[in-house]
Amino acid sequence: MGFLSQTVAHEAITRASRPPWPIPTLALARADETKIVLHQTIESVLRRGEKLDALVEKSNDLSLASQMFYKQAKKANSCCQYA
Image (cartoon, rainbow, N blue to C red; front, side):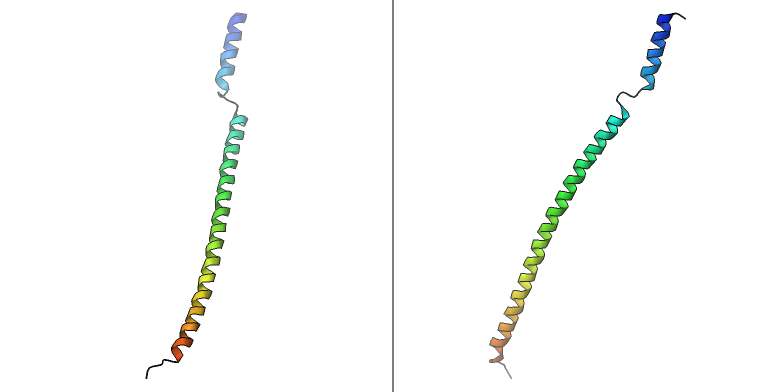
């Protein structure tokens, strides 16, 4: 086997044994994508949490208003009791 044949064979073996892209780069790219998705998910959950907090606050306000309405209605109806 000549020198040129050995070099060509060596290059072919080297190329065949290497993946088309470096694995660490692929792993880093996937980790970056995962990190972006994770940040988006966390932001979404926090926004939902804020909305839930606002709904709970509105619910509490409505509950207090309904209790006040009940007390006022009870007081107003106390003079008109039917026998």
